[in-house]
Length: 353
Image 1: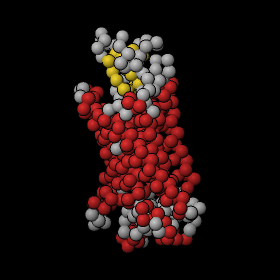
Image 2: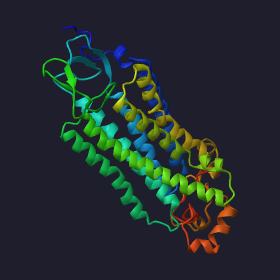
Image 3: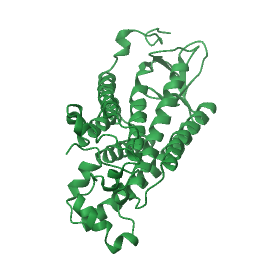
Image 4: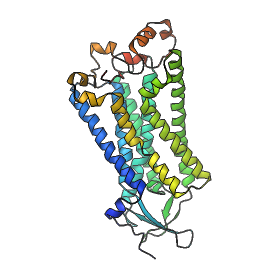
């Protein structure tokens, strides 16, 4: 048997493939952008952080974990010249005697992707609420959005559903045929495990679509341009785009095969949110300008008990439009999006306007 697909780390293999190089660039850029956000929040020097910032911060953390997980492991080569159904697969780290790195990557990617979905739903739920949600409840909901995906991920790990996929380790597509060499064969139960995970993610996609429709209705009713919401909830649309790409790709690959080029493009598109999310957060909230202006930087984190929070700005809807809506009779009859953001704990304003 040829050793050309031996699992052995080298620097050449670490940068193997153009999509691998692009994803590594994503990781570096994501780290820099998230570092800028952390420094900005630290420089704000406020004692308390609003609930929306807690949720968006959690989204950015899980988003970085997701993109960083792609550095752990990678399929460096496949030798399909053997008699079917066997295939030799070389990994960046680990070998036939140890696949801990592969399992770690699978665990982190599955957990972070699902947690990101749930945290975004929580974010939209808070924005869509008329009443202020207590900080303790928000903290518990954030914890649930993290704990539930962790439980699902460890359950998949326990039953052996995580392992080598096409280009990295995720849901197991190939299982070891021999414990002493890197010889694999197709893992037949993959489809069943995939259906469960992508059904859960399809539900998340449907809920985000529901919020999109709800938000759009309110925007239209207030005679605001629809482009306004694209600017203010860009993180939402970035995640929606990622979910759409993933679900379409997985659905197509379940029935039809795809070329290596298409798969590589998918890998690039499905991980670009690692850069786009923190970048959108920085641009929307004016973090660059807040870094150089102490007075503007104070807006970055807002104390939950501050009297100014009662009239805090709302970056979703203009102040006057919000005040008119707040004191109208319709407030008591319907939940209008972002109403609670004028109050205390559910602050959405990070702008430096």
